[in-house]
Amino acid sequence: MAYDILVDTDVLIWYLRGNENAKKLIHSIGDFCISGVTHIELVQGMRNKEELRRFQKTLRQWNTKTIYMNEEISAKALFYVEEYFLSHSMELADALIASTATTYGMKLLTANDKHYRVIKELEIEVFRP
Image (cartoon, rainbow, N blue to C red; front, side, top):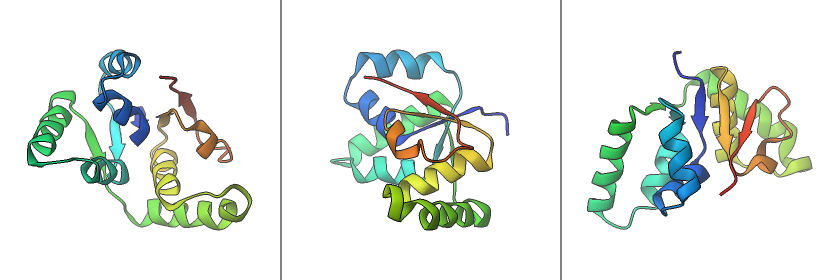
């Protein structure tokens, strides 16, 4: 896969809320991917069809690729939840996002690094708003 960075939901929420640090970062990283989970979470946060259309247009302008769940991503996410839910409260969405990044060897750009630190094979780039 030609993409090196998977952007977490929280970073894009900061962007959509107008955070200048998030805007600078997103515009500086070039092409990036998002998980299908991130795409769904962002759509669920839209207040109306116009916001949804603007969001879809923005993803196209950024040349963002959405990576959808497959058997490998799902199996790895299941492992993460079984391994880390009881000890670290690993949630489904975070497990799916982390497994997407590790499956494709991408760095995860996130402000919620504490959610992911337990996964040793995951390379994390921390965003601070």
